[in-house]
Each structure stands twice: as C-alpha cells, then as structure tokens.
Amino acid sequence: MTPGADRVVIRPAERSDHPGIVALNAAAVVHTSAMDIDLLAALAGLACYLKVAIAGDKLAAFLFAYARGNGIHSVTCEYNVEPPNPASAAFHQSAGFREIGTQWVANRSKRVSLQEAQP
Image (cartoon, rainbow, N blue to C red; front, side, top):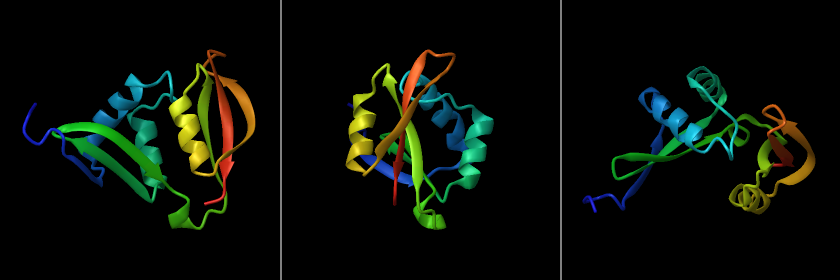
C-alpha cells in the first residue's frame, strides 16, 4: 500500500478537480444521473458547498450542498430504484428524505425515486 493511501482528506473542490468529479460520476452513472463539465460548472455555481474526498492522492468522492446555506426550506433529489441503488436509498432515508413519486428517465432505462426533505 502506498504510504498515506489510507488517509482521507476532505477539502473544498477546485476547478482542477472538475474532470475527476465528472469521471467519478460517469463510472457510477448506472446509480446516478449523467453529468458533464458544463453541468458540473452550473451546479458548482449554485452550490454553497462543494467538497471532495481525497484518499491518498486519488479523488474518491464529492458532495454538493445548497439548501442550508441559502435558506431553502425543502430539498429534493432522486435516486435509482430500477436498477436498484440500496446504498443511496439507505443514505437518503437516514437523512430524512421521503418518496413523493417516481419517474422513468434516460430513455426509460432507469426509474428514479423522487425524494423530498426539510433541512
């Protein structure tokens, strides 16, 4: 194992992280929605919080947040139910989200659960 590879550092995302964030998202697109550099830049411009987790010298995760820092009273999201994404379902349930509907996306190749929570 590379020295320091088990160390995780969470820090604000930098513009130079954007290609890695897009690649990480693309690698998991079966569980997420597609995102390119332009969409990431737009989302980053809206977010009050965009951080990355670096494990050793590798980008391992990213997280956006918008609501709490901007006085938003309801937060919505979606996660896949077909194909299933049980990790995302468990995370959102533990964060207080509840299902308000479902919809088919990506040319009907995925069904997502539409979720809502009050931050």
